[in-house]
Structure formats: C-alpha cells, structure tokens
Amino acid sequence: MKYEFPEDFLWGTATAAAQVEGAAFEDGRGPSIWDVFSRIPGKIANGTVPDVTCDQYHLFEKDIEIMKNMGIKSYRFSFSWSRILPEGTGEVNPAGIAYYKRMIACLKKNGIVPNATMYHWDLPYALQIQGGFGNREVVQWFTNYANILLDNFGEDVELWATFNEPIAVYVGHAYGFFAPGLKNEKYARQCLHNLLVCHGETVKLFRKKNLEHAKIGIVVDVWPHYPARPGNVEDEEIAFYNNEIAGYGIFLHPLFLHGYSEELLAYMKEKDMTPQICEGDFDTIHERIDFYGLNFYNGIYDDADEIKRKEEIEKAGGNYQNKPEAHPEALYQVLHMLVEKYKVDVPIYITENGLPQDDSPDVEKLLDDQERIDCLEQILTWLHKAMADGILVKGYYVWSLLDNFEWSGGYTFRFGMHYTDYETLERIPKKSAGWYRDVIKDHGFTR
Image 1 (tube, helix red, strand yellow):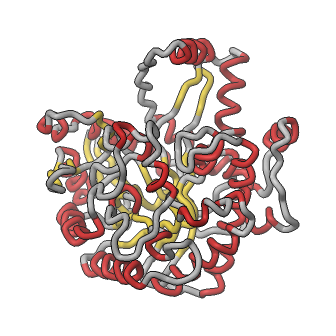
Image 2 (cartoon, helix red, strand yellow):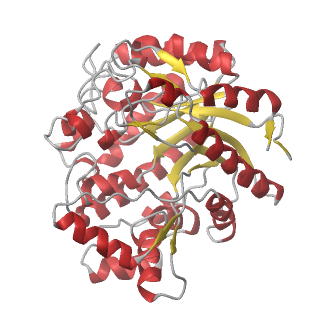
C-alpha cells in the first residue's frame, strides 16, 4: 500500500546544541549544567563529556550539505543559552550571535526551514548556582534571553519552540540522573511551574514583536503508559501515576485545559509539594500557541510484578535487562488523545521520533540499520492513519541527523541516520539516510 503525505508536509530532522555542537569552551561560551554534570563521576556512561561530540559548531556547513542532499525540508536545532549569554544574563556574547546567524543563513540559502528551540535542557551553570528554575527570577532571566533571540533571529526562524521536553527538568531535580543531578521532588515541582510561566511570558513577548512570518509553540514529549493487565489495580495505578503525576499530564493540562488537574493538585497537597503559584500564572501558561510539537518514541505497558522484580534485582546489585517492546500504534492513540482529551486545536508537528542502536565496534553492522527503517515505517503508517482521521499534523522530524551525545547515555546509543566517527568526526550515511531521502522525494512510501 502507498502511504502518501501532502506535498507541503514538512519532512525534517532534529538535533540539540548540547548534543551536537561541541566547542564547549570556545569563543566565549560559558558552561551549562550538562558540562558540569558530565564531570561528576558515574553520571555519564563511560565517563564521557560533550566537549566535542559532533563538532557541528565548526562543521555545520557540511551537515547542511548532507541535509540538502537528502532533501530535508526543515532542520530543528536549539540555541545554547550559555553561548549567547555566558553568565545566563548580562553581556551578550557576539561570537555566539554570529555563529547562529551564519548557520541560519546557510540553512535558508539551501532551502531548509529553520525550526529553533530556545531551551533544550542546557541551563547556564551560572544560573543553576542561583537556584536555576526553582528561583522565580528565572522568568525574567528566560524572557530576557528569549528577547535577545527574537531581536536577532525572529524573522529568520519560521518555527520557534520555547522549551523541549520540560520533563527533563523534573527528572534532573527529582531523580538525579539528568543534570543538574538533584533529588528533591518538591523543588522539582516548583521548577516545572516556573518553567511553564517562562513559556507563557515568552509567548506574550513573541506576540508583541509582531513577527509576520514566524510562529511559536512548545515541544512536550508523550510516552503513554498503559496497564499491562487491564483491570489489575496496581498496574492501572502505576500507569496513571506515570501519565498524570510524573508525565505528560503535568504540562498538557495547564497548557491546553488551564490549571493543574484535580488529581495532580491532590497528590501535591498530600505530599506537601504544591509549588508557589502567583495570581495570573495559569492564564499566562494557557496563552495560546501557534503549534504543538510532539516528541514520540514508544508506548509503555506497566506491570507491577515486573517492576518489583526489577527493583529487587537492582537492589541486590544485579543488572536488569529488558528491552521494551515497540508500540508504534501508540502514536495513533496519542494523537487522538491530544485532540479529544486535551483539546489541542493547533497544528501538530512530530518534532522527534527515532530508534537507538547500541554502540558497536562493527561499523558495517551499524550502517545497516534496517531495524530503524522498519520502526519509522510503522510510525509513519500510524501517523498517516491519524491524519486520515482529520488530525492536523504538518510535519515529521527524525531524531537524529547524526549519532551524538545522548545525555546520561553518553555515546553508547546511536540515534543518527549518519554514523559519527567521534575520533575523525567523519559522517557516514546509514541505510536509513537513503530510505528517508526516498520518502521525502516520493512524499511517502510503499509497504
């Protein structure tokens, strides 16, 4: 069957500054929380750091040439806050502005639509030691930063996202395995609330700029959890918690329905974790956006007995290995949930979707990534079905263009359509790069 997509469908690929740029301490850039966190022993797989990674800071022209040859229509990237403002506030770094001007100009010269994220997890460390997102002053810090971006790049970037996957801020403050590495859920709840206010105030600022050709939105990932055994009380409680208390519901409810859900408010009250909320905050957070970016990777089925077994094995010092099943059909369910439950009535972009490979010394094995192709084809099949139902999805971005620094996983996971040799910085196309080129050229695929 032929799965055809609209001719104006935006086929893209995505990266993030901290994961691909490198040049961590060049040309005036200040340290981010990930530069610091990666230097804490045991936090990153194999003790690696993102100092160089793919070195896109120096090699962006090569990467844009790769994208052009693939037929990529849009490139989703992020700004490094500490490259623009080394201290997070104060004096602007002209070298940082110049770099992004060159890169954006190169994208546009090659007919590639820039899709820019203001914040993709890499808070300037100078702000973290002042409380980071837990400090209400972050609203002023962030809107000042956003104002600099919009004044310098506003009309040159067609799609703006305030934040990417804000759940990472929760994970980094409540669980400790993402930067900044704290374990304080109450503080994490305050961080998330302040972040959402930052988003809303930035949307207000954006409207004041009257940028004729630009749109603004936010990117929230959805990993839907389902009870592995419907009707099993424990499974259902775990799935509900992972969705509504520690997952997408934290964001989607205030963004699209106004305010926190009754269940989340009750949970935070019971645990004495209710954040400080100022008058008008929920109106600000609920400010209308132009599009919603959905990062989707998989659906997850929660089995209480399996979770207990995992905890027992790890408590005893063992290594629990259980690769999750792929559930591409969950994308269809998520898209319907967004429209039907959360009343999302703006265009949706699938801003990230991909499949990791475990690193291997066998490069030829990594280059033959048929498993990735099979996965992406299934995802696009379910996406096509949702669009046929009338759900407005305007584009799809593969994560990622290149193998890169995968946060706490370091360089042990490879998501790229191009193999990155981290010694020589050579980019080698994988089988999926050719497949995606053909999908773009044909506006779809046959399977």
